[in-house]
View 1 (cartoon, rainbow, N blue to C red):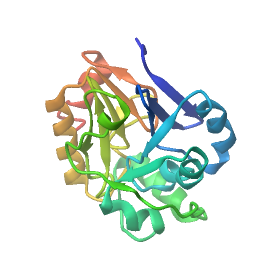
View 2: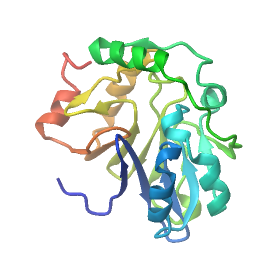
View 3: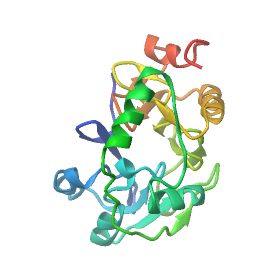
Length: 223
């Protein structure tokens, strides 16, 4: 697919993204500490002034505090996920399908390492312009709750960075775990209404609009 203008940092099963601006860049998600050195090498190519966390799960916030201090950047996320970022076991979630059942077992058996503490400087609201300060046109936060109560995506032009509102392990799929499957379904309907040209996932390869994988995301079977 055409990835012109996309700055994607792929770390195993995790993806981070950078949106470039005239007076500062925006980093979307930070993966886990295991990939800290690898991500840091990439970030030397950018001028990150804002770190946006799509939600409060450890695999997205694991390096937020470290990079905020290193780069002198602000951190933005939903107020609804602050408690989750501070304690990953603070809220219940529900498995969806076979993948969800497997993931639930893995999570229950693993020891969750808490990320380093960080302070949230900006609390996201639906439709908030997050790019103007950095010379980035048409860049706003989009509430996509369901996977977590405070899940957000970032819409930049026709590109939508979706976090874990959907996942793409081989093929786009409903999020395997959700705090509210109903809200997650409504968020995907919202994505369909936005009709982005390209979708970028927290897990898995990006997809372009109008292709079969894109259409499958909005089929009745998927939703």
